[in-house]
Structure formats: structure tokens, C-alpha cells
Amino acid sequence: MHPFLISIGSFHLPTYGTLMVLAILGAIYTATRLGRTVGMYSALILDFCTWVVLVALVGAKVLMVLTEWSYYRANPGEIFSFSTFMAGGVFYGGFLAALFFTIWYVRVQKIAFWKLTDVMAPAVALGHSVGRLGCFSAGCEYGKPTTAPWGVVFTSTFAHEVAGVPLGVRLHPTQLYESMANLAIFGLLIWYFPRRKRDGNVFLAYLGLYAVARFFLEFLRGDEDRGFVFHHLLSTSQFIAILALVGIATVVIWRRIHYGKELSAAAEPATTDAARPDKFARSQTADAGTIDGKAHAVAAAPGPKRGKR
Image 1 (spheres, one colour):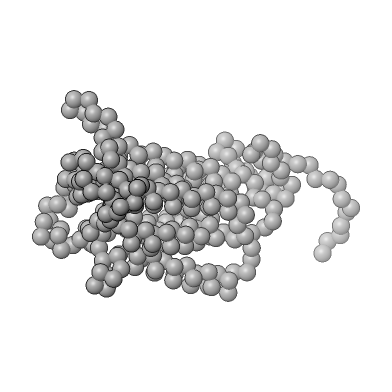
Image 2 (image 1 turned 120 degrees about the vertical axis):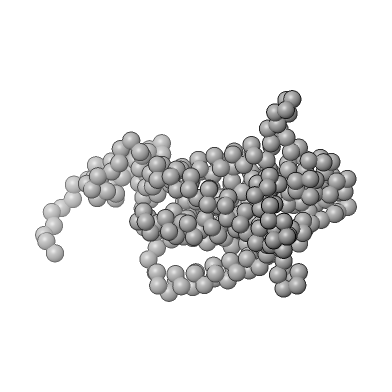
């Protein structure tokens, strides 16, 4: 609707870029806060987020090019054009690239994969919600024509040139639909995070919720440049969503068979960057209490002496 947030002479501040920066900052802040509650240091989360954002941006562009390869093959110069740079790309492309990078990263850094993905899932949902507002401002990811009273009409010639959004036509605000869906998912994940019974449950819940939401939202999308499979029966994102649901079901069954151990009922103490716990402090986990969100040692009541077992 408003591709430029500020326009002063030749200076133009794009709304899409501004909201994308806010989305990334909000996601990093959320991941950092959640990471502290499970003993992951802010420096580690910040380093990971910096790399994963770059990888995700590249992955989103790559899948966008692949889904429209017939066009880019005929116009190879468009691959590195300004319009391609400004386009949001395909979310699942960025997500899959980020997922593969995460698998590599946790192996190198020797981090628990499921714990890290649980921390990142709500952050991704929040960032995606804000990012879709950027798509709405730029006109990309637009919806099909509609007579609904909440339909929107785009009038910016710049948005039409860059994103191809039809002008003067009432369209479904699919960007807003997806933004609200992601915000709702974020709220559910934040509520579920402290109640999870096993590491990885939050991440799997996010995958399932978003896959279902994206599958149905695709029916309202009007942009034809996102790729289709099975003779236009499904969009690329719908096909990936189905694969994601199948993958989630497989992982859940596998985890139930091979991992019966649940998280301890006692909350894991939060750690800060200023004071990293030593071996002795870690051994006193059971005697840790929390006051105002910070971990404090609590003296254990003396008990009867026990003999060796």
C-alpha cells in the first residue's frame, strides 16, 4: 500500500526494508530472551541468528528463482536485478536453507539441536508476522480478486512494476492474513514454551501450525510467480507444507519410540552472560530458585547422613 515510508527529494526509505529490519531485530530479541531461560548464552544466540538470517535470505531468493526457472532462464540478467533483490522470495526456501544450516551449526558448535530450534521457533513466527506487513506495504504476495468489504486496492505504480500487483482491483489482503496467522502462532508457542514436556515439541508445533495455515492461505493467493506442481493442482508451498506434515508425523513417531525421557519437572536455571556457571554451580541445579527472573542459590536444608551405596 505504501512502498516508501519516507520520501524526501531523491531519498526514499522503503517500508518493506524497514519492516524487515524490525522483524529481524524482534526475532533476535525473542530468541535471546528464550535462550537465557534454557541456559543458552546471548552471544551464542546472536552469532547463530546473524548467520541464519543471511542463509535464509539467500535460500528464499534461490527457491524463488527455481520456481520460476523458465522465466529466469530466458532472462538470466533478472536473477541479480533490483526487482529480484527487492522481492521477498519464497519463505519455505529460506526456512529449508536455515534448517540445513542449523543442522550443520549444532554439529560444529556441539549444541542440542532440539533445544536451539525450540528457542528459534517463536522468534521465526514473530519475525515472519512483521515481515508479511512489509510484503503488504510493497504489494508482493498479493491475493486473488474479491468482493469482500475488507479487500484492498493497490494504486502504487512502483509496487506494480516491482511486484506485479494489479492496480485498481480489490484483492484479498493475504499478506495480512498470514501476518495475523503467524502472530497467533507466536502467541501459542510462547504460551506452550514453558509447558513443553520434551525439547523439540515447540519447534514441531510451529512446523505443523504454519504448514496448515500456509496450505489454506495459498488458495487465496493471486500471484502466479510462486511455482506450481502436479499441473497446477498444488502450489510449491502447498506441496512443501504436505511434506512438512508428513515429516512431522514421522519425527513424532520416531521420538516416541526412541526417546521416552521427558524434561525434568524442575525448571532449568537461567544463566547470564556476566556470570557463567561453573561445575559446582551446575551441580546445584536442584537447589536453585528464581527471583525476578534471575537464578539465585538456595541453601538446602541439612538432612540425615547417608552411607555409601
